Length: 473
Image (cartoon, rainbow, N blue to C red; front, side, top):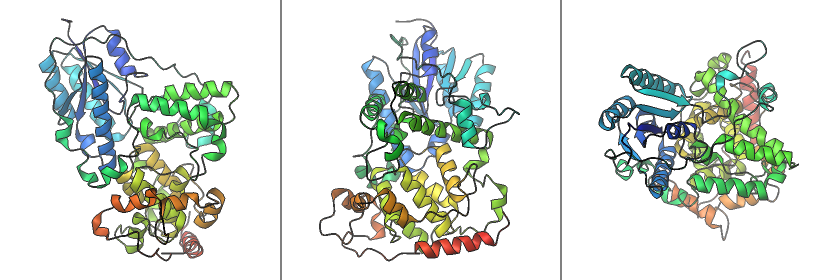
């Protein structure tokens, strides 16, 4: 057993051993490594589905470390106090972690780093969550990019470090610090009965994520450019769940897709652009953190959004009972699987913010409650893009028609049939699962009549445009 002072690897949204710069740095020092997960203030702030899914990922990482003869030390409490206590208990000479980019996380990490260094403890952070650090990508005149296309052009040919393999022969400390049991934290409590339904759709862990990528590259990448918009087809990678919790690194995905492009795969370019769209969202969050909670375009502050989250038409949207098939199918998919097809996300967001003239923040918060692939940057930019209030947004006067969108992207209504049970003699299990996942207090049954439209697409478009015409954009 090693006798040198250990290094603490502070585990956050990087639940993997390969392509992990912080872990690699700890291993390179040839000291004992103590993996530590802290249920801190940022974890406590997570809503139901993300907190539950994070808990599953932490448990899986703990099992993987145990296979290597290591342990994951779990503690609950404020990050600074908890890490300081662990340094005292273990005699650790350093703490390393991979960076986060949300303003709350940056404030936390800055305070932790300063306090540890003041104690003479090495504290180092690394860039494992993104392809490029936000401060390294600038326009020719200086400053950050506010439009995606020039951002893509600026980074598409940049070198990206190759993902490092899983460190070999990690050294154990002489004694392991006390660990709490994550099960005692009840991270899934707020999911209630929905957890049992969504559990059948989660894909947890580093090995599963790697297999998911390999299958996608082999079977679906070639048609990705078109099939990614078809909710009736399994055309996407499904990796948003694993990228969100760091069960696969973006460099791993980037280099795999880059190889496919070099080999002539026709879908690789479109997939690489989607990775960079994720990157763009994080750069915007870093440079303009207001995007997470306020209109990115200040001129939208005076727009007369409806802000009552309990209005009947908003409740119908949340329940997937607007009477608009594409909207309802997408919302029900989220209740059952914890995810939603990207085309569906665009449609439901447009419907809420434009047809119902409802503040995008209500939709953002609802997604944050229900998505297992919740991502602070992508969620914020996606909602503001749809509402028209964000950077590089869809034009505010563009109002998606959910009926024509359905005809175009679900022509045989396979997607709708998979998720809506009412009015059908033999609805599929996916559609029936919705009624097992939702709160009982809603009092809904598959035997109910399918609802009339809360607002028709034509009516919604008309009132949206009327509201826009009254404002000075």
